[in-house]
Length: 205
Image (cartoon, rainbow, N blue to C red):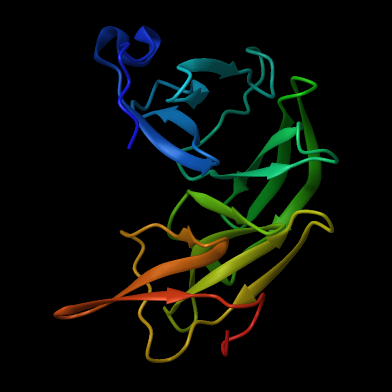
């Protein structure tokens, strides 16, 4: 733990504002206002106290707005100095689009205009980046079972990953990393278990 001798950036707390964490990578936080009318998205480095406001993809005159049901994650672009935000924005009840914001270029790009997701729903809007993949917790609408959704950020291809049958995912505990591997906590009363994915894409991992 590092002790900070100077206060956090004042913008984070002006007018009693509060934020939720949408994504993290290498200690950098992606934040969004919790109030329904607060659509501001911020990138914040708690160590350096550097704060950057992410501009909206659409002009103020547009009827398109971000939603509390949008999901986010970080990825790297073509180089390690090009950090990017991935947003799966809600278009309608069964459709999302994939948008990417480049910090290097300061602009949004729509990568995939239409993603159908009528067979599942997102249980957590916070994605986590591990070795070229973004992961979210989803719920299969047919079985009501929690699964993992993986996005290959290079090929921009989605895949579902089942967890072992004796493992119970919970949306209240976010995904994490341990020694560069995806991990999550399984809760089976009265015990908690830590599961680590050894390799990409399989129940046996």
